[in-house]
Image 1 (cartoon, one colour):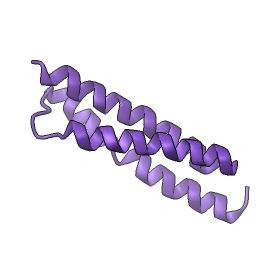
Image 2 (image 1 turned 135 degrees about the vertical axis):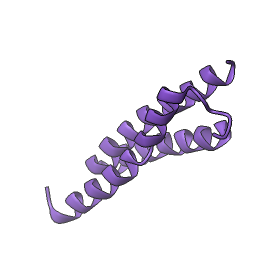
Image 3 (image 1 turned 45 degrees about the horizontal axis):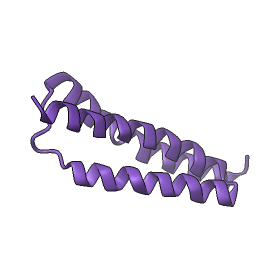
Length: 86
């Protein structure tokens, strides 16, 4: 792993963990009224495209961080849909 991979991985980790506090807050409060499903839906779709791009470029930091981000954002989308009904 070279220094550019390390920088890419570090940047990806920062972006990836940015959604964790929101997930925890929604999980605890069960409130999603102020959270946009469209925003998280578009973001999740964008992450899928980044994963495809990373696979095409054979860029492991892009693939790994965006796969984790994709999963976390899917959790958030699920919470928004599930708790919006309540």
